[in-house]
Length: 122
Image (tube, rainbow, N blue to C red; front, top):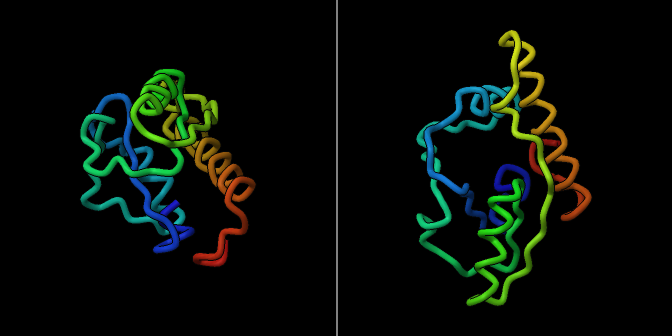
């Protein structure tokens, strides 16, 4: 989102668990010129700013936590069901293809929801 919309939006990313960085995520984003150097995964509990208009969740667990946020905040929540590519099996290339599919589907959803992606000509 930040790559495509830049300073037009405030974006924070988190998951159910902070976890570790995923080298496959970094690889498929690097293919697009998105540098994840210094990125540290965080959880909902790690969010410093909770002033959001919209939370987009990708897994049932994350959606549940996002809905919990609506108890105390006036935010909209959207659920974009997404297959977890970290469960992929096979060769490195097959696993990368799973991650690319998630990346590309997410980009299409961003275009549909927020309009044309203008940064870097995408």
